[in-house]
Length: 149
Image (cartoon, rainbow, N blue to C red; front, side, top):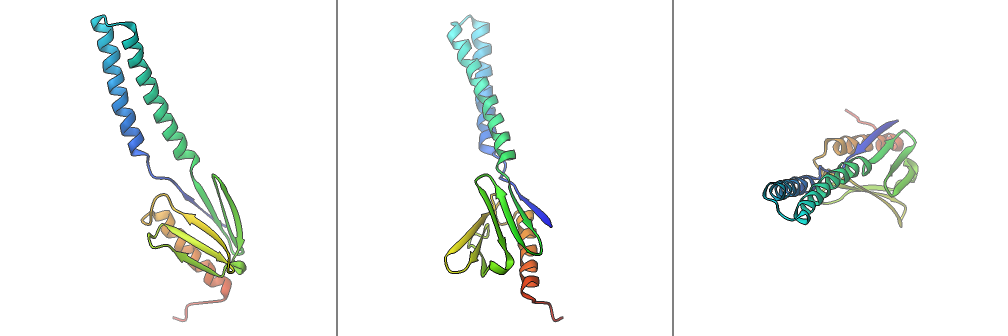
């Protein structure tokens, strides 16, 4: 069995916003303390600092918890992660299509049932590309296809 881990993109906006908010909060707190401004201004600066730290913490937690794992073996697949736990056998898969954006696979199980696998890293994610190659190989093998050359 081979396990692929699809990770979300780095939350750059959250980190940049946290950096800006922390600098503003630190400036406000330092200026309030140095210039004898009201305590409420100092507290406001500290609140901004705490908010920035919380934002960084939330971004780091989301990067760790929003991973999707795809297990492939000779019998089928298992997709599990936040909000999804889907298993399927290769014999049940009637079609696999890559969406136009190249970052989403659609497994068809007959006429109606579909399993969608989206890669948050985009179509250029090396792990997703390796998963796609392995998926093609395993589907071909399950159907008895082989390379003639």
